[in-house]
Image (cartoon, rainbow, N blue to C red):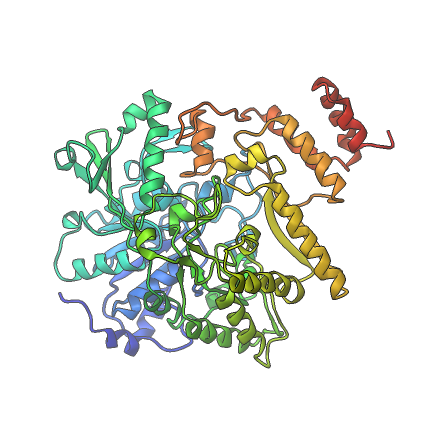
Length: 618
């Protein structure tokens, strides 16, 4: 059966209507079949920031009939998995916008009491590892229907990975989940390619070479050695036997995932091999516009009437302007999922969405965020894209900004000015994280440096909702180097700019720094010195966290293997609960209940001089 004509979806779609979630809604649309049914661990919010909504709308725009089953009940008679029957093409499965284990558990492995992606923030609406649970149920009920997995959980567990909550190395999620294919990263292009192929008569088992997908292959299909187009990695079994082998693998995984033109990765696992096809090149503005310009209602489905979904509250009046991040922070998964190259929307597309936001009935004049994975990377890339296409650096900013990087913030300022000129907009805020090392970097071009200085001033003057959150992450340069973050001296310089602008315009805004404890390379003494420094700067820290190992980051691999993947040298990392708590309490030196413990610890560390600095009054 050939792919539907794209005009078909227009006849089946009514503006202001959600994708159907019930049999009744499907009957109302007059469909005689469903092409794709998407199962998601999140509530259904029809918004361009929500993965299932995006994939559903993209498929719809290409002529397919798509239904969504949000947060199906996996503990009853499985009626949610049966109610819509089977689709013509495939089931799509996603754990949601977060890895389920990060969603469910704290850094201390304690069960969380809420879930931001569930109505009323209620916990327990999804299982641990929904990708595995949902796909097993669907394959048992409908063994002949292909299953396509996507989303953060499947994407970041596409190869052997350390699972902090099970405290062991796990194989590719394909080993546990009976899915036929995984789309990793931003999945629009891969998903449409799969749908078109299946609609034109291909078998799912034939789809082995689609970019940005993961498949199982026969061991016989694997190349015999690494070459220009392929990387043959240590097997899962070798990685179980040798942490060094796993560390060596990760270096290849990160490099290939951040290339413009990556190689195919192969990892033997048991009696088959996991094949990871290279990522697509960065989306063009036309491609990313086409995704964002679809007819989203921008609202939760009416089934959630009178229920508050915390994640939606954060994004309801926000606009995402680009994808990707070239910061390459060692503890962050953005580049592993979205890639390091920036895919920016056109100004016209952004303004169309802004106008949708300002016309919402509950809009009060405030855009909550004009941002992205990193707020100030919009429109940025290398001066020479040919150099970018051959680059293997995981970060364009560390250990120092790339000489080829064009950090001109003028396109951002133009967006801000155009948005703020709308009569309905009282103020637009920048709620995403700002990379001050990017905006403060001296480019060597006086015109660009002047624009960037203007950006910093306008950011602080016009786009802060009383509190500007930035992420120095630590005060120790050794720890920061391990994190791939700039020296703390740069934060001090940014704070000077922040204080100057506040004084100049008589503002009373706060600078709120984020910090991490127990990161690989961080010793207790580093945290003690962090307490001294932040006290001297008059910060009573509140935005802090204990390092949580998540799949597919450099920091996680160091935590698990004890080795840095790029040097294979040993790195100290706090592991025990006692070590982690000993580090964390230094954040809260100002809390009387920690004073005695901190004082005793500093005596044990033979640093009574720091006691006097933290507690000068004794």
